[in-house]
Image (cartoon, rainbow, N blue to C red; front, side, top):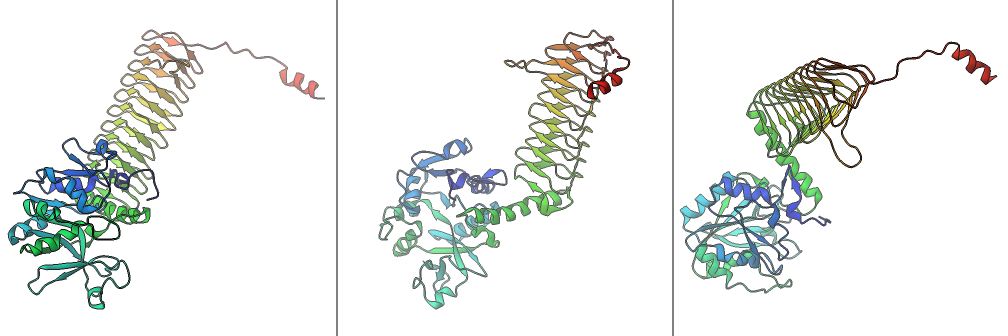
Length: 443
């Protein structure tokens, strides 16, 4: 990956790569999930709490990695070994693999796939009874015969084992290769030598074979994962006007009859209600959008927009913002860490930060709450049914009472009582003949 970040922590549609096979295992009903980490335990902080971590002291191959987790393997358990950089495996595939393994009585069952172009993959050679005889690697010239290269069935790297048989075979592995490593597929000949069967189960979706070795692979897999995510939303009653341009993370929830217009990015733990319109080129990050809300080309990050509220176009709602039912954040409005009351409107060209605004209030164009004094953030409180005029500024901490007004261009530094008009500006003074004076100076 040419990255300081471990490969399996690179994000794929909102989840690190390692989270995808973990989720698939859980969805398939796994009673225990164990992740093999390195001695620096760089993965541990990114795993669900109920996932066990086994430490492989040195990177001595896949067989050694599984051996590091042997203490977590029960003799009578079916053990499925997954690969952290093969994220598209799903619960249906794993359920089918486990069923085939347990019904066959084999000591091990390999998940395989049939590919149109199997170049680079290990070929699965079966015996006359259909059992796996061996896996032939094809990475270097001469590794396989022409007949073996013609085989389209390949090893996915995912296997199911009987727990006791797996642990016994792991103890017999030898590093008889140039890398000096212990490879997991080498347990299969050991099992056959012990008189046990090794079976194969063909995956119906060849995408489960797609591993990630670089960022080009990541992009290819991401396209498939995104298509699956979008398809699931559409089948659940969501309209994606242009599915190819809708970037929706795996954890996003969207209600029925919602419309997502082209070019939207919806990520993190975003939850969108029913009957919502998300306008073109909107970005939602960890946002909560209520039923019937309308978002027009806006950027919403960590904010909550309640039912029937409207946002945008070109609005920016920052973390901690709550836009209550029927409220409005209009064109070129930025709101941060503020509560905007039911039915309140902030129509255009305003900044509202660290502010509590009541119900039914109208914030005039160009209003600013000055919340920072250079050292500390302070809050502004604006009551119900307040009408602030254009270009009003509120120097926090300050309170404007219910039903109050402010005069245009006012800088409000003191509290405005309920029902009062707050004006803070110099009286207008007209200087007669000013243009003539300027003209004489310019001659």
